[in-house]
Image 1 (cartoon, rainbow, N blue to C red):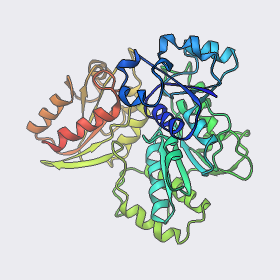
Image 2: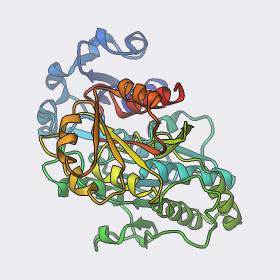
Image 3: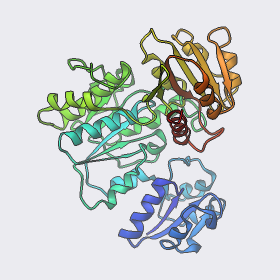
Image 4: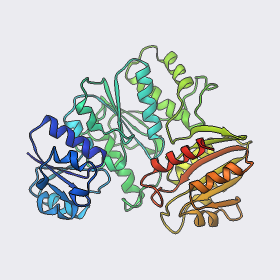
Length: 420
């Protein structure tokens, strides 16, 4: 069988490792740039013949000859190089679909615009606390395909899924599927909000009445056949020791609790109360960093859109001063941040990066704004300032003006703050 892997980020390399170690398929690789410039090129040459490695501008000539193309989530199905392959009937699938076909581990799958990493982490940690063996993977940063190389099988795969990953699934089937929420996002990929939402509905593909769905009520639709549980705040637990800020986290706890119920976790209420007490959150998602001269500093670096930042801001109780640090790459010449946050209890906005001028304009007359070229300038200001209260780093904009991804931006913020 001839298989092409299009895109050699983490998921593509994970599939390559499996194909090389466990199969005798004829594998081709396609990626941006000349093969000799690829990351891990020395290792790749030990797994695939050099003549089967192509720059993406040369890929069209071999794609129609493939039996299957495994597509990186970062590459849209409408990519020009794929047209001839799709027209020829070549199967184009995602790493998610490929892995599912080669695994018999039952799946709990989570999607949504915001909160999916936190909820995925919660589910994985509480199931592990209950003694189950779980593999937490997907959009969270560990490829689902890594499952295929494990020496010992887990009881469940807990898979976080983005809309990009769901675009190219066919047989994928989640025993429990969660659709947390949907707000407008990824305008660079989708023509409209509806197309984005529809991609996420692929998480329910192939589910039937024996399966379960945990979903926001306003996202429900008749075509979903699985048994439905509507998301709400989880009450009847003591949150006094919880390190998680914000009422919305009670909904995330609800999702984790319901998954545990559906999987028949024993002694659940005792285990879950201890979990609420112990859970410290997810890196770059309302992550508490430190106190500095009376200023409590939180890193919400994973928030790259208005809805996520608004959710983070709303997590803070009225009272102490709240300083909001946001900025990054401009998506367009306008933003809805001003309207979305105008009634928030923000003391001052600290704007950085390419978007700083637009941020200053939309908040003019609403909140005071200080502008910084980059995070180092912002950190230098914090070191010398006398701010007290809470500082929330929640960018609301993509990172690509100065960083390769939001993780690098968020981790640099953490390093700068810890070094103050």
